[in-house]
Amino acid sequence: GAVVSQHPSRVICKSGTSVKIECRSLDFQATTMFWYRQFPKQSLMLMATSNEGSKATYEQGVEKDKFLINHASLTLSTLTVTSAHPEDSSFYICSAKDQAYEQYFGPGTRLTVT
Amino acid sequence: GQSLEQPSEVTAVEGAIVQINCTYQTSGFYGLSWYQQHDGGAPTFLSYNALDGLEETGRFSSFLSRSDSYGYLLLQELQMKDSASYFCAVKKSGGYNKLIFGAGTRLAVHP
Image 1 (cartoon, rainbow over the protein chains, first blue to last red):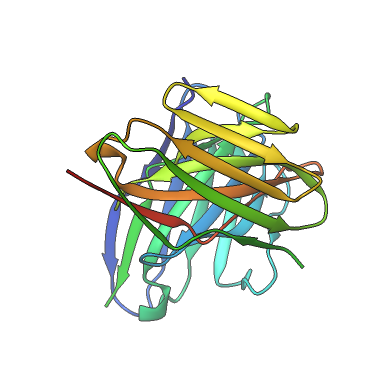
Image 2 (cartoon, each protein chain N blue to C red; image 1 turned 90 degrees about the vertical axis):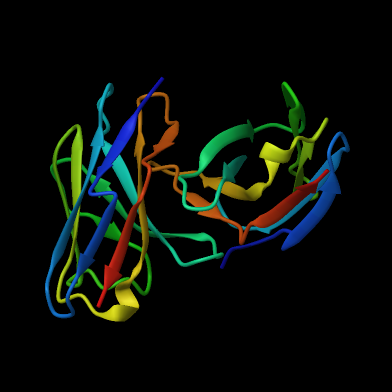
């Protein structure tokens, strides 16, 4: 089956620093990847749609300058949380869409900003 | 706008049957998906309906009525390991087929 990985699985950073999260499709090519965030006991909120070779499309209310997305290849998308603050602490999950238009989710990255 | 509603919590005993309902309001509806998520884990795909009717996958079944903007997930022969959060998600039409998730239903299965 289709496998999506994320790295790191957990990260702790200090307030004001930037953190990069990688999302990789391991056995298929994904022209489109999605980034979600999830607060404890809440739903997954779609942040942005990432397309290979073009700019990401952000959902309303998501700051594109704070959450930088790069989709440089058909198997890799990165999310960089810039100038992180404690309120950015969350569970970040990516998904990748294959050619059959199914989405496969990564295992998530737990970000803690101190 | 768009919205999905599902119960926040459901409790059941092992071996029982549980139905989790989902109503939605959205433009550009393509289909309804169901995901399971254990605490700290990633969502895993359970079932998908694009057309009206029932889809059965082992102990899990999902139903959709497009005219009523309503669907449900049916879990049979409940097991302790089924304790998790269950999300309905609308798959949007359009080039990206985005998923918009409901708030989730926490299912607790007791002995």
